[in-house]
Length: 493
Image 1 (tube, one colour):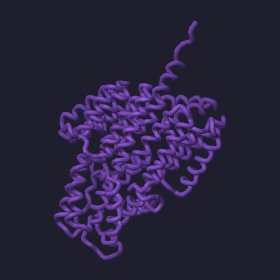
Image 2: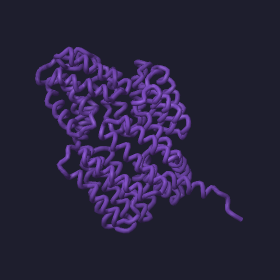
Image 3: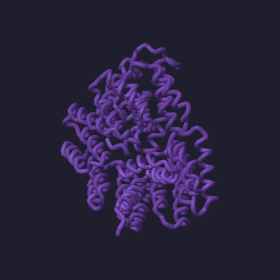
């Protein structure tokens, strides 16, 4: 399971075995009888398909699971949870919007727990973040002994970078069932992203032992080894996954690892191979974006821009507004001329404001990233532009939207304060975004300038060891490593 891809999929894309005794109810919440969350449908065939989808998701066979959930909605058109799972598994924005509406429409026929689940997950996708989180907390309180609810909530917290809380819930789920492979998998990522690789590796050893013939345990192990900087071992695990199932997608993991190793042409070759097995337009655009970024790692910016323009065109034709905007935003991040960069950002905003099907949370978060890029690019040369973008970000953050938007606002505020030389004031803002290489680099500078050498050394180690395959990593980490290496050289006589 590739973490970057996982972030794009909501927590619903995990193994959740619900009780199989729910039946259509009245138009009001039911009193809880079962200790586990029920599933409401009047169709045995739909229930069987729903549970089959869950079993396939336990093995991370996402396309097959999605096919089962779609089939379940055809057997029971009012099956609220099946509609919800389709919405969160699909990569088609129009289907997501349609299925979320169906899930909410038929929610009153379901149990209280199901209604909370729908309110939570539909809410955060549709921009109703605060009531969505309240529903999540109510769901957790309603089923305190349901390890699957613990797992569901734990994984969502992981994606929100709340690692301590996620670990607590996932460990509690494993206490109930030590062989819960799905919880072991996600807990391994939680440890790895907290830099506790010893525990992460132990989780992956358990995961592989539980499902030795499945590709995903090797794929997950490969990614965690890569996060630890053990590139060759990571490639070996990815190749085991490819051998078990060439169509599973682990070729992307090999490509990502080569990209981090500086083997950019090898990475491009692997991305091209991965495209042969990809049927989803969203996945194809994502792979093409990663391929384009390899050129920037080689300082071949003109080739990178050419590739990204092709990505944006592909995304536009496929109706993938967020990915189209992202391509233009990445160009702005690398563009040396501020005027051209600001023009790229204006172009990036256009698809978000056109009549495309796009989840409100995706639109808002991409808009926030565009504003952050505008502010961070303009802080040195156009203070008015930077401050205007920052004010817009603050308004978004104060409206109670996602943690991503709040974090992005802090990052922009910190960047502006560093540019003004107000390092002490910048620290609390940058610390809110200390997992983003752009903010980590500024945080290192601010710690150094304020005499906090221990913290600066800690951030330096984290940044030089940063191995997630993101555009921010490509933009910051290789050059930062060179800077650190140069400073460590003894002075020339």
